[in-house]
Image (cartoon, rainbow, N blue to C red; front, side, top):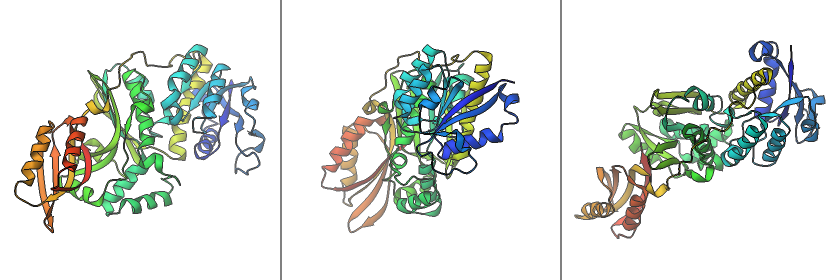
Length: 425
């Protein structure tokens, strides 16, 4: 039975999970993939660090030990970050080696470049683990749903923010308390910026949109907002409206171009994503033939992400055995423009404080009207010291119309504060 040798780049949380899964699957790998898989080298930063259960003879801090090893046909990159991962993957592909990566940061910016090299070299570059951890979504978008014209992909693709919002909604925690709990449990990094500011989700949206719509979308094309401004008062009103607040990544292929955004959204309690709790992820895809399909599961972690990596490894090994690597490379054969964010239409939930005086509500409504913003609902519940808290829900309006209205409102003496501006699906 043939043996395919692989080099593993990185032995952190995900890399350790991949190594363990390969060892666990060793006896059945030949039956699953058509060949045995053997790790022939592991690139690490510190070869002197003790790693339980890992053969120290495999460890190296020299990239040359892997790239110059002609027996290695497959490189598995789980280092993360842009550099040196970009350079190492480029060199591996140019050397005729196939690559499996979990690197969303890299693919969201340089995916086109790397896929072009893979196509030239007739090698595989697979990246299931780059989006939504253990949830299979990239293979369905690129293969299983290829017979569809996909018009929308939306999802909860960051477990840290979903955990935080779940605790705020279900247990009444403040944002700070929920973040501290997420950090304690290991869901949030020591520096949680990429999660709570929506950057992590934005990278994943860029990758999904590119595959779903067959047109290149990069991270800079995605409008990104985080969850740091969500308050207990916002959660309270969401409950009254039988809704939840989730950080949602959404990409649409419209007749005017691709929309790609990440921001907190008010979802009806009946929406399929509303019931996705804690650190779980889910992605909802709409196609013309299949209608709606939803993928749900663990979006991060050692073994869920390693599971996605292993699925790609098995695919690559099958292709190597059959001599057909490079059969699926870049699927971006279209050139669809990305819409300006200002031209995207959304419904809005606004919470503001204004003077509780006759005529104030009418003047606020006239400002919205002047900027082509149609109001669908107004709720006034709290009056303190002559100031009323208003909640206003709008119909779908262009982003720039809403921003112009908000700037106008902030200039009114009667408006004391605009507390929250949250989009509604």
